Image (cartoon, rainbow, N blue to C red; front, side):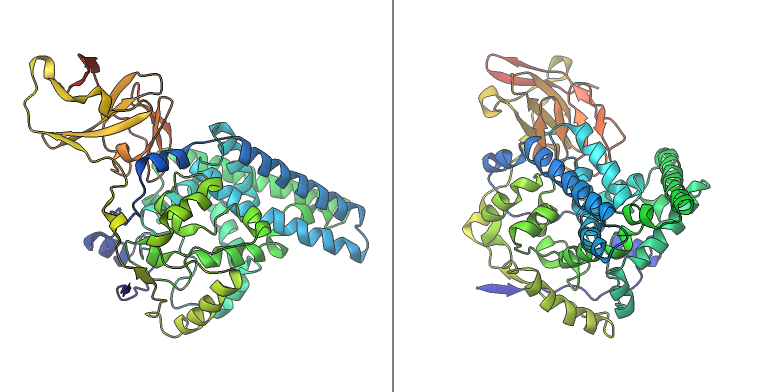
Length: 474
C-alpha cells in the first residue's frame, strides 16, 4: 500500500533576500526538522566509520586518469585525434570534480581532514565554485533543501527556461555567473544573498581565494597568448565548456522536477541506480536520498545505507535514462506551468518506523545536589565511543564516553544548526554534528570544523559507584 504525498503550491521568487525568504521562515520551513528513515544506532555507527583508504584509492586513480588523457591530448595536439583524449579529460576535469568537491566539502571522504580540505580546494577550482562561499551555501542547501527563498543551490528554478537548461550542458550560465561573482569578490564586494548565509568573518577568505583564482586564469591566458595556442586553455578554462555535460546529466537527477517546500527528502530528491563506471565518476551520489537524510555517511558506505532504508523510500530509478524520462517531460511542463511537479509515492509506514534511529534522551526532574551535581544514569548505559542526550530543567546536555573510557559533557545542541549532538558521530575526542558535519572538541567545546563558529559550553562529569554524575552548576 502506498500513500500519495502532496506538496504545497510552487513559489517562484528564488531570491534569498526577497519576500519568499521571510515567508519560508513564517511557515516553519527554514532550519526545520526533516523526516529521517529509522536506522538502528548500532548499524548507523558502523556506516559512519571513516577511512582514508577508499578515497585515497579513488582520488589517485582520478588524478592518474587526468594525467593520462591530458598527456595523450598534448601528444596528439595538432591532429584531429586530440579531440578524443581531450573529450575524456574535460569530463574528468569538469564533471567528475563535482562529486569530489561535494564529498570533501562534507569532510566524510577521508578520515584525515586535511586531505578533505586539500581535495575540496582543488575540486572547487576545477568545477568553478568558490570554495568558501560554496561551503556555506551547501550547508544551507542541506538545512533547507529546495526551500524557495532559502536554498541557494536550486538548479532548476521555475518557470523552467528550456534554452537556459540546454545551455547548462555547456556551463554557459554557470561561467557567466561565476566570473561575475568572482570579480565582485576580487574588489572586496559581497552580494546581498551571500550575506544571508556567509558569516562576515569569512569574507576575507572569500576575497583572497577569488584573487588567487583570477591570477591563475590570467596566467593561463598569458601562456596561451605567449605560445599563440589555445592548448593551455584546453587544460584549464575550456574544460568547463566542453566537459560539463556529464555533471548536468548526473546532477539533474538529484532534484529536478520534484516538489519544492517539503520537509521530506523522499519527495524532493531521487536515488538513481548507476553502472560501476558512473558510480565511480559520481562517487555514489546517485544514492542521493540516502545522502540528504544522513550526510555523515561516507560515499563508499551509501550502498549499504540504501539497503537498510530501502523499504522506507520510493522505488529508485533504474538508471540515468529512466530518471531523465521523467525529468524531461516535467521540465517542459514546468516551463509553462510553474506549479507542476512530479508527485512521489511514499511507502506506507511499517513496523520498522517505530524503531528509534537514535537512543532516546534521558530526562530528569530531580534537583541538583551540592556543587550542581546530579546523577545521569548507570555507566553501563553509555558504551565506549558513544554519546547520549540528557535533559534537565529545559536544557539539553550531551554526555560522551570515548573509546578509551574518558567521560566528557557539553551542551547538547549544535551552536550552528541547533541539532542534537547525541545523533552525531563521536570520533576520538571530536563530535560531528549530523546536520552539517561541523565538529567540536568535546574536551573544551572548541570548534574543529565549520560551519559552527561558536564553541560549546563544557561541564564537569565523572563516574562514581558505577553511575555517571554531571555538574550543571553555572
